[in-house]
Length: 152
Length: 152
DNA sequence: TCCTAGTATGTTATTACATAACACCCTATA
DNA sequence: TATAGGGTGTTATGTAATAACATACTAGGA
Image 1 (cartoon, rainbow over the protein chains, first blue to last red):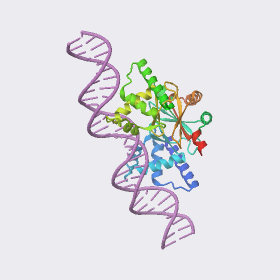
Image 2: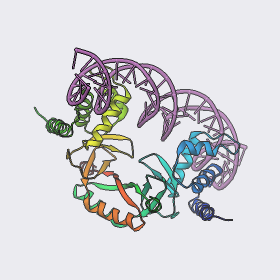
Image 3: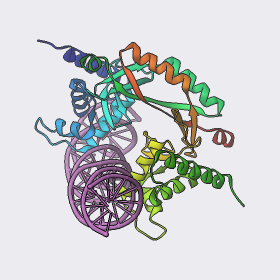
Image 4: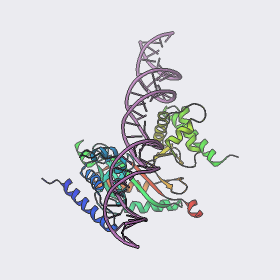
């Protein structure tokens, strides 16, 4: 059986290859490995879980290798870092350049991604009203997802 | 000369005392000390800078002491944690319970606080549209503040 | 008065998160 | 064929946060 997770992963990998080729960067083994692990995970992962997972299949994998891959993937928008708890999650809408909000369920820990054009405009205006020129925005939430609400 | 920073600090301390009394909690020495240091700082501070600063006036101050004080002050809304870079800043509008966005200048590192009722409603709706019940929200930005824009 | 529950701090040790610095390897191109 | 740029491997270290346990103060009940 081919799960939807697996399909999503194939998509992400292809997206990544395409993005790299377009921008002249290499989609190397460690970058692929990190993206695969994240894409296969149900929930956002901590860096050190990623590191040990990446090291399972033979060769040892050390922190800098994984952090470098994460930086790279974040810049491409294929992975998001959740600042609240220093975790990393593969992006659902791979390749979007737009900002997204990430809502993490307190029960199952899964992340829900939501685009927020409208919100960013408002915040830009609010910032501008105080003379602040907004360049980067982080929007994150915690709460309860639909599945967990049903289950409760 | 009495600076506005000092006035702000006096205000904050009084707010803190009042809040604690109302809720039956103690505004103890380490809590006061941490709040004073943060209120006196121009910019958000890292926890370990706080720790060494707190330890300057005689007695050694260890991480748990400061982290406990920070947790306490954050819960009261007197201090905010900036998730992006793990720093802490005294709250401008002491005692507000409402959510605020924190915009940090990339040049001078000062934080600007902005209330955002409107935004939180929108995000709650956006979350609700995906069945997500939003309980806590983090909104943070980076960019350039007014002063630094003028100077450039 | 003495006990005990609740709140808070002090201290040691450890766990978790992240990066600096340097050696080495590819590969495109001048 | 030299060399510059991009990338990885490795060691070591820096930085952020908490677990676990001992101790102290205070308020209220027996």
